[in-house]
Length: 476
Image (cartoon, rainbow, N blue to C red; front, side, top):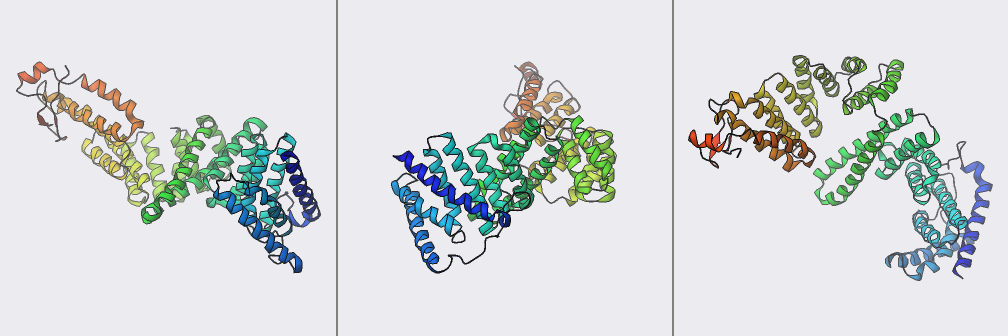
């Protein structure tokens, strides 16, 4: 009995719906087959008797839908919802956006109860057409197309080629307004287009740039909103989590393509065509930095970017270039220019950390520590600055004492920093534990500690430039 009702509902919806769209397709779709926004015209509820019927059926369906929703979509109110919703959907396209929002849930319910693959596919087709009608009636094309593409994949992941076309249009039209899920599925389908449909791998790099620009813009904006609007922090944290998840997924999907060889092949062509495209150069340098690649193109592009656009970003790129070339003294002024101009705390922290490492290589340990501490202050959950400070202490040990105990005391202070690093940043635990193991074995022996008048557990101020209090420990 239920199956017959499902078929009746479906035939009633789809047959009339398809007829309506066939008659109006010429006026409601563009040359690429996309619904034209706001192309349905007319009074909200129609005219004359149609107007009365639209208001009546809209009220009936909405009331029953609310009851169904309040039961967590479990009670029988759905049985009294479908017919009136169908009427509004077909006859009153401009009556309410809720027709399309609720329609997604109604079609999901009917799809889940359908008994045959043919009927299930028909409901998917109806859902896709419903999104077209939503765009024709109310516009907001980018948002609706994004939802359409994501829903298509949720029902049938093998429709990724069709979904890619939809999501690509959504992201291009929506830009930074694109939701995290839309960006995520957009790049997932991009990769599948290359792997399974033989699309040019260039689209992976182009679409990665597009997707990352959207994600980074929104993460920055949401973090600022969380700081400025604590009352909405919980909601914004959830939105931020969505973009963070998308970021992780994108990087994982992009990783196999982002070899130094591929990056060089892709960006060499782009740079040759337009060496004055500052946006492209910035993305190229960022991609090279992530893979720790430094071909000649990297250096040429860094210098070109600073020439075209002497900004904190281009100063940072040039500083990184000289760092990679181990021309540390040349790198310092560019790094300082970058730090002075960068506003984002995370980016500034990364710049301070790089400057700290530059000073470390120049054996200017005091300046190295000072910059590492600034990096740690701006990015308190990053363990790398503390690893670097620990390394500075460890390499200074022999010069900071004059006997078998004091000349190893810096190892105590170094291990303190490694312990701190892994306590705040689990991602550095492996490297921290490795160093802890090495330098604990280099502690003075209990015999030497006793012989030179020290006691395990006592406080001790490490000498020379370190000038830091730690605790006496032995290797045995």
